[in-house]
Length: 388
Image 1 (cartoon, rainbow, N blue to C red):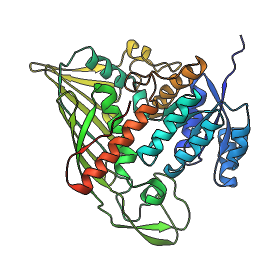
Image 2 (cartoon, rainbow, N blue to C red):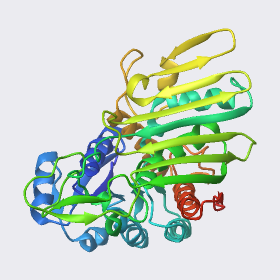
Image 3 (tube, rainbow, N blue to C red):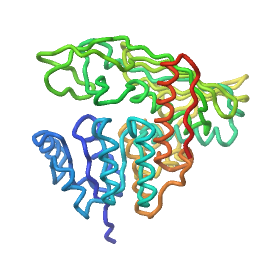
Image 4 (tube, rainbow, N blue to C red):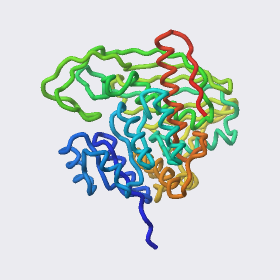
């Protein structure tokens, strides 16, 4: 039997774009046929390295190609809305990296056009792809921990902890008004709402820019890579750190700590959910393939099983006892997105129940960041804007 693979174009040759190329191939549903970059030489080098047949700087040419089914938007934050709207207008399904847009209005325009066109629009909240995240979600919804009282956790990194650390993300002209909250806080927020099925209704945020000026090199610096050569000074107006307290729709509370300047913390993402009967905890760095379940009289470790693998649509999941990696999680996030296109359906609109993070999930995260910025500037609680 001959199965037509969906043909995808990946826009962006930086850190994340190449990972999307690999993940697309591993879904079993698609193939990456084009790399679109802002620099012809970098695009060509990226395509050659990844064995992608077409490298170009001409996005319009790619969008005009009727054989392209899907566009992956893996470029800088400021370009997400423009590229996504252009791709949707050309009849392409879109998978966009987070943040979906720079503000709620932009995200709403993207969601509205996708709905009007009947196209599938997804957002790359990769951590939903981990099997034990899905297991935690299932346990919470089955009532295994009781009514949720308190959620806590954080996302801690160190890759921007020195004044000489530079990346386009520290430039508000490229990344938008928020950095730590939009870049990593949006991941924590989506993970929390996905697992708990709770909704944040209000936030109180405190933010800080620990490094007020950075050394900007003359050329581009890839994510997580050190800069070298001559530099100029750039004043920083986005946050390095944030502490956010939240009120949940179900009556519980939540809090998270975010930082990109804590030495020694590489990608420390944690989520702990305390219910009336038990507490669940997940730690990306230390135990991504395990859950800690604690009760008043005992505690236990839940290990990934064959049943957990079955929750994931991606092909050939790793067997129990073999830790699932970040690239596998990205694949397992993309697989249901591609399957939705093959099946001719979109998500049901309820982001926490969707098999992949849909436009509403992207809107929720944008609304969360926007509310946190409002709170941090006013010193007051701020409501998280309503979405569908």
